[in-house]
Image (cartoon, rainbow over all chains, first blue to last red; front, side, top):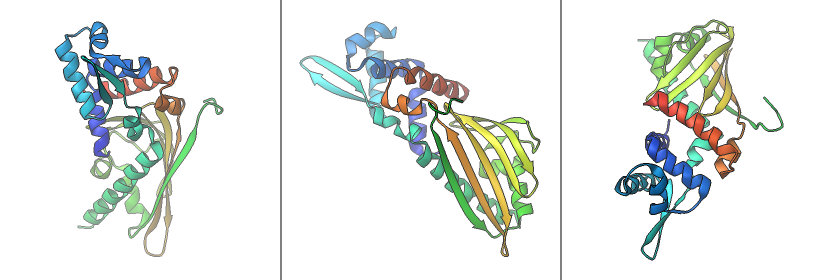
Amino acid sequence: MPRSHEILFRTLADPTRRALFERLCRDGDQTVGALTAQAGVSQPAVSKHLAVLKQAGLVRDRHEGRQTHYSAELDALAPLTDWTNQMTGFWQSRFDALEDLLTRMDQ
Amino acid sequence: MNETSAETRSVVVEREIPHPPEKIWRALTQPHLIEEWLMKNDFKPVVDHHFSFRADWGAVECQVLEVEPHKTLSYTWDGLGLQSVVTWTLIPTSTGTQLRMEQTGFLPDQKQAYFGAKAGWPRFFTALEKLLERHE
């Protein structure tokens, strides 16, 4: 699988992080305070998770006065949903590996 | 599967390979060989056999649909909320084999999930979560 998948999977593997991302997808733009109120973890923990999500391109932040608002970047999920491109690339690379193996089987 | 709500897509990869069908068949059906080019697996060339492919990014659940030695092999391929069927076809040529892989997928609600429709998300994340749990 391409590297972009690994990053997305790793980022969303944490349940708290996944819940934050899902909430942003469902409810739209949110402040850190509003997210913390429902996350069940401390604000520094929420901020840390948001930083990881941002690094993976899954969320975007916007400063408004003293508040930071976060929103979900749905386009970042494209590698997971653009199925045809994803699988074509996957199988092309598997065909390469298969040919390598067949050559080695001769020896 | 409700055809009106499901989207069907197909991926075809085809290549002329300078090896005979019998040899390619071994690479497609023997678990230790499959692992070398595809993924870890508990495959058996037996119709209805349930097996899975496992990699560090997750797992794919499969079931064998069709086995015609040296000619055709087909199995279901379910992962990340999509159901699909992978079919291998081997046609002998003067220099080796024309190897064809066709994967046909059904993507219920996948498009809605992408665009964030409320109905699509929970299902998308349930599928993602299942995959990630296996990954952890």
